[in-house]
Amino acid sequence: MTMHRVLTTLGCALTTVLATAWSAAPPTQPAATTVRTDDGLVRGAAHAGYRTFEGIPYAAPPVGGLRWAPPRPAAPWPGVRDATRPASACPQPAGEVPGGSTDEDCLHLNVTTPDDAVPARPRPVIVWLHGGGLTTGAGSSYDAHRMATRGDVVVVTVNYRLGALGFLAHSGLPGSGTFGLADQQAALRWVRTEIGAFGGDAHNVTLAGESAGGYSVCAQLASPAATGLFDRAIIESGPCTGRPDRPFAPSSVPLSTARATGAGLAAKVGCGSAHDVLSCLRRVSVPRLLAAQDTDQQPAYATPLLPTDPGAAITAGRFHHVPVLIGNNHDEGNGWAAGIIQVGNPVTPETWPEVVSAFFPAPGETKAIVHEYPVHRTDGGPVFGAVIGDANFACPTARTDALLAAQVPTWRYEFADEHAPPLTSGTPPFPLGAPHASELPYLFDLGGRPRDLTAAQHRLADTMIDYWTRFARTTDPNGSSSPYWPRRTVLSLAPDHIAPTRTAEPRHHCAFWNAPG
Image 1: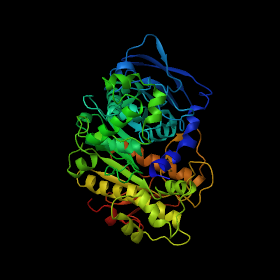
Image 2: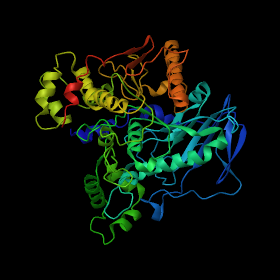
Image 3: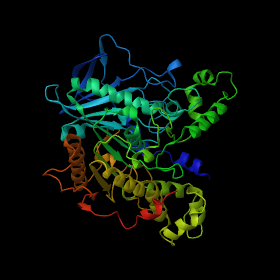
């Protein structure tokens, strides 16, 4: 089985949990509340201690001639717009969104505010970019009411164009390879202009995200077009120094590579030899585009929006100098390792070199990896998980942290709850510990469902929300209710142990993974 096929089979680790967002019932006790925006009135829903406003358009529908065009302003609407339930997710295959989505009218966002947030006393704002390989996901999958009420902040979750519709590159097409990133910037401009009416502080905006959303934050840090759009950044499991040859974490690609991918897509859908390729592509149905696109997407650099690869920009110090909170999970790679094993790729001393060669195909790397991470009879799965986690997340995060900390206030964590609730159904072939995305239920109710956490895990969740929201408020995550988090340390987050450490866990072979090349 090829690496591409395996990654396609595994899909997003959050699929099972987040799918409930799209089958959940509307609020059981909605109470109307109305806010005036520049485009018109919106009526949200009042809950116990907070208000929600869902499905607010922040840009015009990218349909027809606006498919593969930079986002345009939303059209004003008459009367009062219903904002009591989510709008459509951006087009994507079935998975997180049951049945998928083919609706291109998807550039909407959702606002969650504490009950007493008013323009006269504005709260800090956290803008959340969802993960999903830049191919799946939706802002409305993340119920942010606990963060809003406990942290006394306004939370905005965003839909942005995904897959080929968000990241197609083609010669002569303005915005090639970065339409999804441009959408995120349009949402941030909406926040600067409109969030005050919802009780948010337009001058105190933290841009946050996980996985592909975290890497999107990296891209915005490196984008000149994002100047002045946010004041702090939170990056969860999306290290800015990702590389295409380590495909489990997101990264960017040169515009030339993205154009070659775009040409391949055009050929697959019958437009490769058309007189006007773009006009032909704009007539292709969404289901056909989704069937032809790659599993994961990568933004293009060497473009106006993203002139430089984010890792290179941060290495050179050419990024927006805002405070950053960054981290990863202790066992990022275990979910992928378990899934790869379950679809027919056992990891034993005999098969280990072949598995390494398939998933880390850089010339000459196999022997070195097998030497650094030997497999014995009973530990194949965890060793494979450690390789994926170290190569794609832990070590690039350590490098990103060091680069950022030399320039801006930076706080680094490692989420390490070895009994974190599983995000997918079924029994894995080995204990997963704290895999990719397992920190998210501690910050959000995924899919609008309450968390299944122990009392100790609830306390950890509260502590994490306290750290995240204090950082958003003042840059310093510390407070009297939480263990002290010194800068230049790694804060380990586990129910029975919240404490800073001076170095990464011994299992991380970061000198090996962060070597040049």
